[in-house]
Image 1: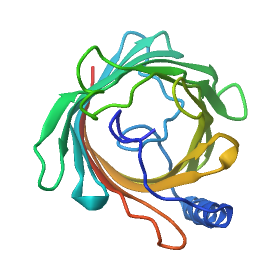
Image 2: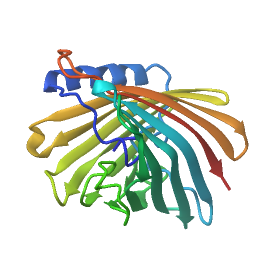
Image 3: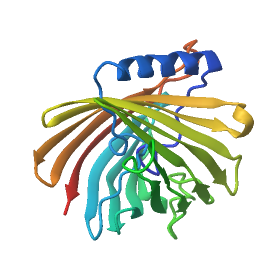
Length: 264
């Protein structure tokens, strides 16, 4: 689950040894007076919901630089959330894709759309940790984006669990679940988040993985991001990432995210 519907390909295989090493680095970093908070500009989500009757809208531009000079942009990406009570969140995501290949014409069109419902059924105030489930259904829009290679043909359903635990001043976030594809092989998506706050600034980082069924192939990306509260209800979101691999044989995918989050 990358930044949006356009960002599904990491282009890197990763071994179990590499995964263990990266996770160890993240956990070690988290233990140094840090705080974690999932959600945009990262891929890994958290257990938080907007609150009853409250709205959260993110408008962003994402980009990917893939092998052979292929660039893929989502401009804009819109991520919209609405709180129903204190524990439910309705979510919708859609974007406008622009593909620019070296020596080829620029192609643009509507991305896939995603609809989801997050339910936080455990709160830290009443349990050892907060836990939520966030099923999301992604489907093709009735446009020519699939035919022109901007979107993958078919639907998918991602059913992750999110976990969040506060160990003052530490907060750790984890998300994992199956991603069912109707036309291709199923996957498992997962991620772990760490971060640290400095007043209005929050530095965040994650390792997010996508593995084929039975973990025959594993693709990982490392994202580092910043959140800066411009004013109440308005936050700047920035992130940059790259695919990672322990032997350096596969082509690297670079990604970036620039956006504004509005809460009202």
